[in-house]
Amino acid sequence: MKKLLMINWALLAVMVFLTISGCGSKDGDDDMDPIDANNSGYFLKAKVDGKVVEFKTETLLSVEIESSLPGVYNLSLSGGRQVSNQSALEEVITIILTETTPITEKSYTGLVPFETGFKGVLLGYSLEVEEKAYITDVNDPNVNLQITEIKDTSVKGKFSGVVIEFLSGETKTITEGEFFAPRRN
Image (cartoon, one colour):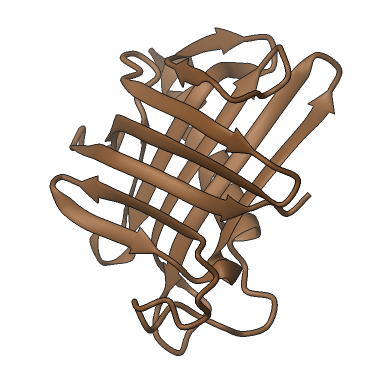
């Protein structure tokens, strides 16, 4: 049990790190205006416990597909909204996919232990006002990711899942997730 708790904390730390590093604003733009001021067409949206959450600011959306280790392939997707006039993130959705074959246009489900951590889909959500971070439950991974299009400049897809805040045990259900995000690599 203690080892599992340490793994859960490690996953949470990875999610927070990737969110912060993947969603940083390069030019100071933020997502204070929920209407897509830059008209990029990029977005990440979902329903979190039935409430629509949508991110449209291009500088706070990103997808990276890479192979950091031989035989290990990763997709990292994040979208967020900044707190008005601050660099802190108010709300974030993050998806990390780890596979042993190249990432392609198909459906991915679940999460299983693997030599370098976990293989499968890791979904994360945080909301600053709640001061909580939610992540896929490694004991009961209810998560789905469908990649519908991979291009040199962007990735499209859909996602859903249940995420848990490990200290309280509180869960959130993410449904109707959809994204069209720019690739950063």
